[in-house]
Length: 351
Image 1 (cartoon, rainbow, N blue to C red):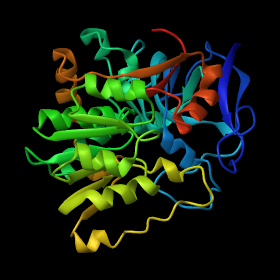
Image 2: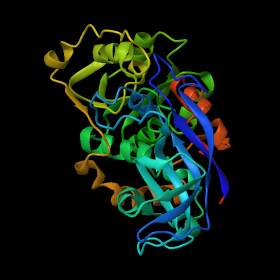
Image 3: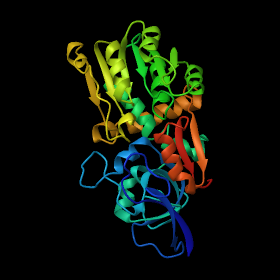
Image 4: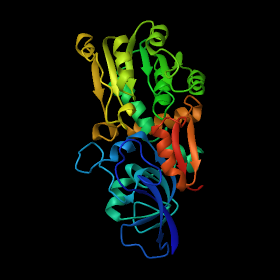
């Protein structure tokens, strides 16, 4: 029997998750030598993805949403990269690298995955063996965050060369990719972030303008950096940031709502007072969930395109990687409090 560290979710938090209480580390045992039933696979998990949307799954299961609530006192789930160490499933071979699809990979060192669940939840991703890209990219720039950026901007933003794109949370897992795709499409790109070093990073990526929303006057900076107004807003924050953007939005602008992290941990969401601008400026306001079937059809095109961009150096990507599965609860809290830089990843073990 082998010890198996697991990240366990216990109950919904009142506001922010509490490390060691809402989310904690537990140890069980697993028999790695036991024969596998037909269709099953045994995984050694290598990389875990920690994302803001996970906070929304920490709720009463009776409350419906686009992603299922976490089960109380159960192993946390999310995006993962794992190594197949044993297989009794013709779709998977020993030594395959597999991607655990959004919200379906297990946050534990080893996973015994049942046949039907394996077929539904895991995709073979042997690309890193040949292209040399980091495994962590497959839960980041080549995973759900990158696909969200690609589909959100191209499908819902309907960008035209010369337009102004503004991105909140621009140095995050999704925002940094949105900005670089925007530049590649000929847009004038402005972003905001929560620290001066993050702002400098945005400038290194080629953003036309960037500012620290915590220390600068947001309205003044949007006036200065977006002199022609905002045509496309990639929304990840909500609350007062959305109100500022509506003031600067151009007629027939597009708002792409990928997330609203300001609303995830509060019982009293900030009221946006100028929503009438959606009507008077004839704005398109599209919320989207990347896991919807009509969005996932872009996955193959996206991975092929973005992999090539990465190999050619046209796209850069910043990550915060913490070592050890025991640090997962703190990593999640850091994401929700904005302490991480770029994509937050937990490295369980090396490949």
